[in-house]
Image (tube, rainbow over all chains, first blue to last red; front, top):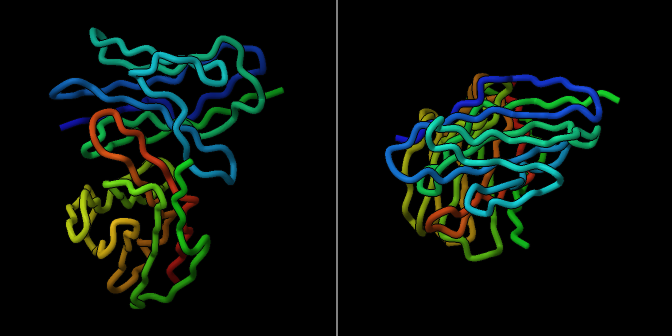
Amino acid sequence: AQRVTQPEKLLSVFKGAPVELKCNYSYSGSPELFWYVQYSRQRLQLLLRHISRESIKGFTADLNKGETSFHLKKPFAQEEDSAMYYCGGGSYIPTFGRGTSLIVHP
Amino acid sequence: DVKVTQSSRYLVKRTGEKVFLECVQDMDHENMFWYRQDPGLGLRLIYFSYDVKMKEKGDIPEGYSVSREKKERFSLILESASTNQTSMYLCASSLGGNNSPLHFGNGTRLTVT
């Protein structure tokens, strides 16, 4: 069974500070991992997927199989990054962490 | 761009009422899902479907049922609404296959009084 854990409910930083939102997983096979973001009053949307290895809105996420982690990082946070972030895994039965609320203060 | 449409943004129902939440997607996706979103609990899977007339229970199916008579439409049914079903309900779809991300609707905020 797939399991995704986000240990932080809330992350509060100042504009320009680095951000790391943690995600850990436990998988029986090859992991399929995604980060989703929900801005205020908007729908939940895909931010990153692990197979793409891309940077979206300055965010990156690297799959670390040794640590079973898929942390989301951004070197310099912006106020518009304030949102709810969910780490999700699996395409057969997609499961999610509990979400981390990121607040970026001016 | 995939569009997942949930018929109602807000609903207020009374305890014991039968409630229908409708979801339609326009990209011929195989898979459809219903989640409920609660603060501190994240997204919890209620039911999902991989094909027309097929359904499988998720993590919290009690008190819910679903219907998928057409590929594009996936309905969530609360047979007898209770106050603990007050929540945000999210519908999602995906193409299927490996590494297919979910596409979400705007959500339905259901209040049961």
